[in-house]
Length: 531
Image 1 (cartoon, rainbow, N blue to C red):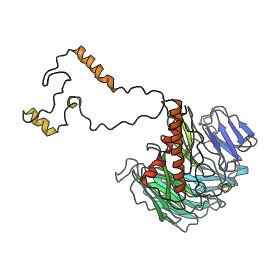
Image 2 (image 1 turned 180 degrees about the horizontal axis):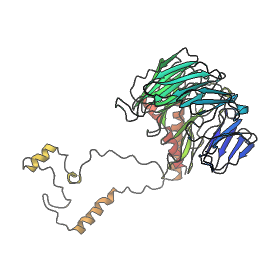
Image 3 (image 1 turned 135 degrees about the horizontal axis):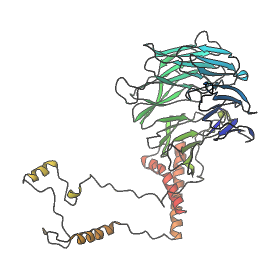
Image 4 (image 1 turned 180 degrees about the vertical axis):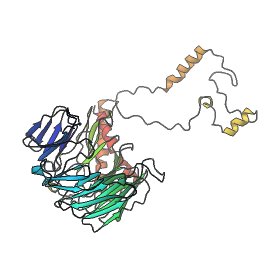
C-alpha cells in the first residue's frame, strides 16, 4: 500500500519487510523503517511523522506488545510507542499544523505536543463511554467526540477547542445512533455527523437507519439535515469553499441534493441510481455516480449553471477521484474488489475518455495531493484529443442480440401463437383447439407422422442447426478499412463540435445527445480497425 501526506509533500509505501518514505517532489528517499508485517500506516498532515500499526501480540510477561509506533520521517527513528489492541479508531491524529497530536484510550482522549509525543501526557479530555474522536482541519483546531446511547440516555456529539476542555463549544444529542461518521469542512468550522443503526425499528430497511446532522463549531447553529426521501444516506461531500455540501440519499433510485451552509436545499439533481458524489478541487464541476452494485454511470454537473455537462459510463469502477487541477476524473477497477478487467481510465471534465490502461492486477491508484490554489478555476473547455483508447476485447464489440419475446417451453415452440391457461385447460377437457400445434415437416405430407428413426432426427437436427452459424466475414481491404476510419474520425470531429456547443451553454436536441453519448464506442471502433 502507499500513502501521501495530506498536502502531498511526503510519500510512503509499505511491503512485508519495511516502509520506505520519500520526498514526493524529488523522490529522494528520506528513510526506511525496517519493520516487518506492518498492517497499516499513516502520515501526519505536513509529512513530519509516520504512525504504524501491527497486530498485537502477548509478551512473555503477559503484557501486550507496543504495536502502535510513531516515527520521525526524516531520520526513521522511533519517537513513541503504545499498546493498541483494536485496529478501528487506532489512528494517531495530528492537527493541521502538527502542533498537537492525540490518541484515544478507555474513557479519555490524550493530547501531546507533537515534539513530545509519548512523554508525559500534556492534556486529557475525560468523558465516560467515549467511542470515537476526530480532530478538525483548519487554523483553529477543535476536537469532536462521540458517546453512544447508554441505558436510555441519548447519544451525544460534543466539540471542544484545543486545549480548552472545560466547556464544550457545541453539543448535539440524538437517538438511533449505534455508530457515526464525521465529515469536517476544509476550514474546520462545520461538521456533518452521519448516524447509523444496525437495526431499523420501523422494519423499512434491512440495513438499519441513517440520519444526518449539521453542527457549527461556534455553537450558534445545529440541526437535522432535511432529507425528503426515505432510505439510507449513501454519500456526503463538502464543497471546497466549505459553505455548501451535497447528500446522496434514499432507497434506490436515490436522490442527490445540494444544501447551503444552513442546511437549506439549494438544488435537486434528480432521482437516479447513484451512490457517490465529489466536487472537483476548484468546486466548478460535480461528479455524481453509481458504483459498486450499480452500473457505473457518471453524471458531470456545472456548479455555476447547475446544468448537466455530460453522462457517461465507467463499468465495474471501484475507485474514483478528481485530479488536483480539477480537469480530469480518474476511475479504476481494483483487486480484490474485482479480479478481472483491472485497469484505469482518465476522463476529461466534459466526459470524454482521454486515456485508458489495462493492468493484470491493480491494487491501488491515486493522485499526489496538491493545493487547489495552484490551479485556479477555469471555465469548461473543449476536451483534448484522446491519447490512448484500448480496442474491445475479443476482436470487436459483441453483436447486439435482438429481443426474442417471451419465453416459450420447448413443447409449445413452433405453434402459431402462444396459448393461454384457459385454452390449455379447455384442450385437456376436449373442448376447443389443442394447445400444441402440429409442426409441419418440410417435404412430408400435411398431417402425416414423422416416422424417421433417431439417427435421422439427429442428422436433421444437425442440418437445421447449420444455417444458424453466421458465415465468416471476409477481411475488408486496406482501402475499405481506411475509408471506414476516415468516416469514424469525421463522426468524432462532429461529436467534439457538439461538445463545444454544450460547453458554451447551448442546448442539444435528443439526437445530438445520443451522438455525443456514442463517442467512446466510436473511439473503440477506430482502435479495433487500427489493430
